[in-house]
Amino acid sequence: MKARRKTIPPKLKLVSEAINDAIEEAKRIKELSIQEEVIVELDKVNAALEVAKEEITKIMK
Image 1 (cartoon, helix red, strand yellow):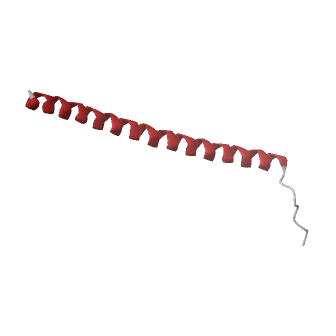
Image 2: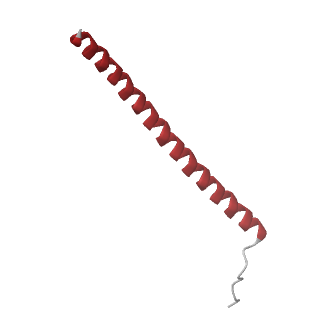
């Protein structure tokens, strides 16, 4: 049986690097998506707090 090569063929290395790059990009996009969802939810909370503040101001007058 032939001994296995210890080095990765250049074409396979390029494919491997492209896959790794794609995985990293997917992770980055997922993180940005999560951050965007958090921002949307925080905007909703801020809007609700503004409404509550206005209601309290009306009651206090």
